[in-house]
Image (cartoon, rainbow, N blue to C red):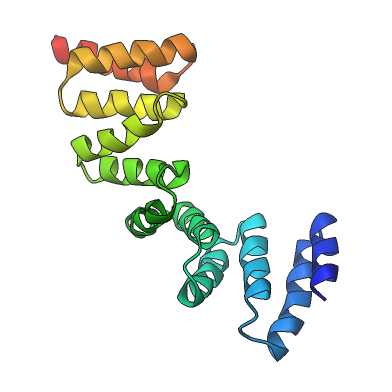
Length: 178
């Protein structure tokens, strides 16, 4: 049956694949492969509540980096950043440089006003990602390191000319100086 599920997935027939997995789970409710297929399929169709649910079941059975990644993604989509950050910390124990975990922690700490902690996470990814570099700029701005923030926002704009967030950051700095 699982090979049929895979064929349906490849054809984009996700709802039929979900129904078919239901038959497997009726006879084997703890079948890990079926639970994973469900979690992934619910993620594909954007049903983050059910994806989160099935990743939770999987994580209760085995802590695996791919299950943590799926759980974090679902939680982020649901706007549950506090919980996503907890799972991100767990993921970093397995994969020290996982970008999803690092960016989740950076954004979470930014949201709750822990800018130095957020900056530490943003710095880890800023060399390769202008969105993370932009986060570095905003952390400096919030910590009132205006010169450093200005420097970072100019760097973002040199890499991404139309970046509205960096432009806004520069406008905020100019208003602060007046």
